[in-house]
Length: 325
Ligand code: PBG
Picture (cartoon, helix red, strand yellow):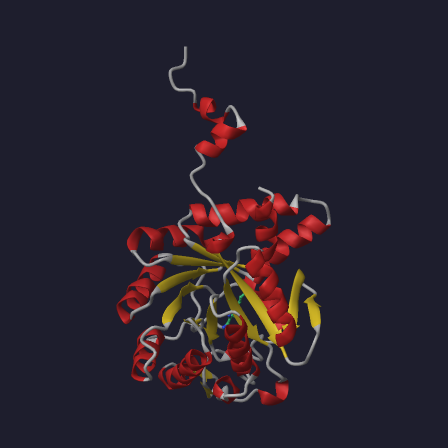
């Protein structure tokens, strides 16, 4: 007779529940929100079924629905009008910019939720890049000052966590110091620690109209072939004061999530990006996979790999499903 029969632990639904190692709840998820100018409007993003660009008033309604479902953390991204984009992303720290207004209004209505704000030049940059450009080169240190101004402006507007998403060197330390000098010692930094130059950002760039106007992002975002390099990035972000460290995208980089989890003690965040969302939605629409099960399995696998928190366009849909689980 067999002494070890692993199937015994799978024999009923109750036992399967009892031995389940990984759990996800809506509170583990961060929901991205695309914010646009205007009133009382929302437009669906073609490559992301069921994900919308919202005017601020509509975003407030969406947040209210999510809060009801147990989602408590939101990551807004702005759709900046073309005429407001320039070489230095100056719109990013103008007090009345769409983004800063949105953060203020959200925090005013929902004092208890958590806002993760995006610190990056690309939505405001006429070139669609994440840094200042000179002679076709993306400058590093010159860009830091703009990022810090942006971060302080977002903290003033009420952001709980600022998230530098551009892979510039030294940004976490620079932003930490500028936040502290401005009195925002309580504002956390979620570092996009290992962000890869990925094909999976396509739908996001469509949503924001933020695709680079020339070249690509390979001099700052990481080479998909590299895993050890992520540990160098993590070491630096940790030393510079990152409160959270992120891996992005999620599914093609589960090994990197695991490696950061095993080597660092900060919470690890995974960004389940637009292209990962779009793939599941597209296949489900064709009836090729069961979209709801694929969503659950995807989120589970990301947590199982070691992520504590998942930034995902599925947050609301998962929270709806969770109510009936
Ligand atoms: C850039 C940024 C990107 C995403 C979030 N912030 C894309 C890029 O590097 O061009 C992509 C997120 C997604 O695809 O869901 N600051």
